Each structure stands twice: as structure tokens, then as C-alpha cells.
Image (tube, rainbow, N blue to C red; front, side):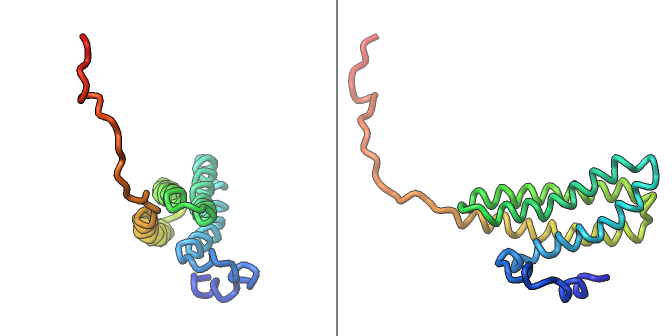
Length: 153
């Protein structure tokens, strides 16, 4: 199954959600689907059980943090969760690297490419969200200077 084939089979109750318009979200769900197969292979090797758990959590955290960030009202909060998602994508790439001996070079190369694409998308989204924050209305603050009076020593 590839990404385009998967996109066609998504039920409308998911694709009608405005969150679905975020490509990084759709892409991260696709990564979760293919990660399941990889984790199933890794867990069979006793040396890779803890790694498989870490990998599955990291990949799942990408979409979970995008979902959480999307629901936030302020751009600052959205950016924070998208940064968490970015960290999870980088972490997942590291776990895939560590599991490459069991998964094979072709699988690692493919997953690393997909995760790098997610990272690129998130690296574009985070600064855009930060730039959209609501700034305080400019005004002149009038304060009395503490230096204008004589201070007894």
C-alpha cells in the first residue's frame, strides 16, 4: 500500500474534519499504519522489544501532537505542540536507524525518507504559527521614574 492508495480509502467521517486538510497530519497517520508492520517484525527479535515500543510511541506521537496542536486557540500553543510533533518525528527516525539491522536497509531508507518529509513540513509550519501570534496593541506606558527623585543613602 502506498500513500495515494491509502488516501482514497479513508472514510468521509475522517476526511470531512478540517484537521484532515493538514498534509502533515494525513502523512503522519500513514506513517503510523506502516510503522505497525515494522513494529510487528521488530518485536519478534527479543533484543528489539523495547526499541519496538519506543518506535511505535514516537511515530504515534507525531499525529497525536498535530491533533492536539490543531485544537489550540493561540498560535503559540499550536506551535508548541507542532514542535513536540517535530521532536517525535526526529526521535522516530532515530529509532528506525537503531532497528535497521532487523528491518533492513531498504525499509530504513524508505521510513527515514518519509520521516524527513514530515520533519520538513513541520519545520515550515512551526515558524508560520509563531508569526501569526496576536501582538499587544502598542501604547505609551507612563511611569514615574525612580531616578527622578533624590534617594537618601
